[in-house]
Image (cartoon, rainbow, N blue to C red; front, side, top):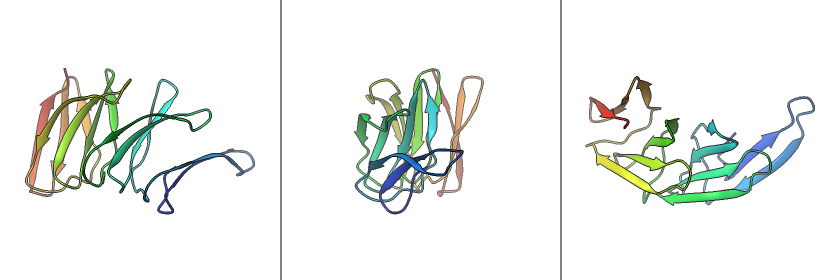
Amino acid sequence: FSSLDSMFYSLDLKTGWVNWRFQMGKGSISSPCFFEDCLYFGSADGNLYCIHSEDGKEIWRHDCESQVSGSPIIHQGKLFCGMGNGFFICLNAKNGNLIWKYKTDGPITGIPAIDDNLVYIGSMDHHLYAFESK
């Protein structure tokens, strides 16, 4: 789980002891998503992170140039996430490369939803957006 103390923690479910921790630049309210042994989450430091779920080692980070206030989801190898600056981005989940981004007129703090090949996100500009996930 991510935390406001700038750390991402992995805990042993039986003992509650810390397995490992990962240092971010700032705290986070982003919930992680899991895909192919990797954890993906954002931080107030403006980065989306991909770390290995077994040891917490960083695989990649993507500079979003704004607080990552939303939580990411992954669909068909693509990561989707909203930003505090109103951008909604799509990244390659394997390497963190930007595929596309779209600017709304308000911050995005929610978690995207997927139905078939459409990705939905709400913005604080009072609009709901739908994008093709292909």
